[in-house]
Image (cartoon, rainbow, N blue to C red; front, side, top):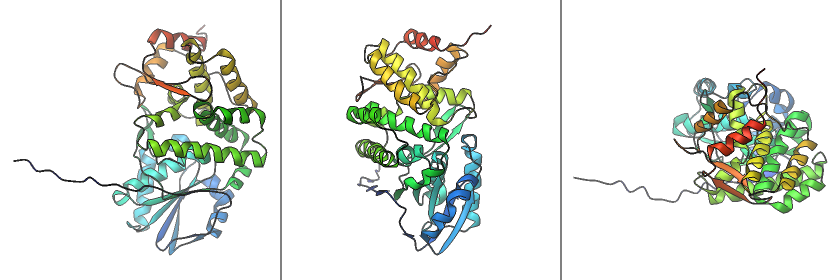
Length: 351
């Protein structure tokens, strides 16, 4: 005898993205704010002055990608239970990409899922990671290999939080802006060539363009079955770099920048991109002092680490390569010899 459970339904995961001064936020239930000491020291008073709730609790975790793991998730969940949160409670992820990923993941797990909102305080988080509902943690096998899709109820992007951002963190965010332009919008990339994002008006426009691009992609492909994978341009190489350096040397956006340079090299030898276009991308990245060359210690080891990527299979590696500027191709047809030739360009001497 066979039974079936009919669970066919449409779930509306739509949510607003507010760009501008943080508005007043009012919630009836308990609210937990997840943050780190750096962000809380600089901006927590601002958030609290805009927040009204029945009860507000602060959960503070150390700052850094190396803390984006299951141990930290366990700590966050314990604090949520300590504060007696329930299914009607709300979690606010207040910080950069690490806070957003951890907060969303914890919210998706607590009592099988509660609401959360994103209030990103870094450029990288504002233009990319706060939008789209990807959550997760790293492990020894790679980046974001454990996680869920759990969409926020809202995203509040206040560019004023960026006034305290260190130069390196700013550059790391610019890398994600460039990624959006190269993959989907040639006109926007040309605008980036002509304008300095250190200007406040230019920055707000760039944030708007990047977020609109990300939103359109997520609307079409929420669970990354096709188009959304194109947003991983630069990440296939970059995740290997982060894994090799144990997340301690480079910021995520810095590895994305170096990964885009490598992906462009691969696109050039594959006939998808001209050398002139690759140099134009490199020039924009260099303007914000992003690193452009990663020292590959072992080509074969680097190559084998590709297979730990979520988008790769047992025998093929999926690469996201630009087709010129403003278009992109997702392919698993690049042979190993070609990839290793590109990696050899960056191999450091073993003498």
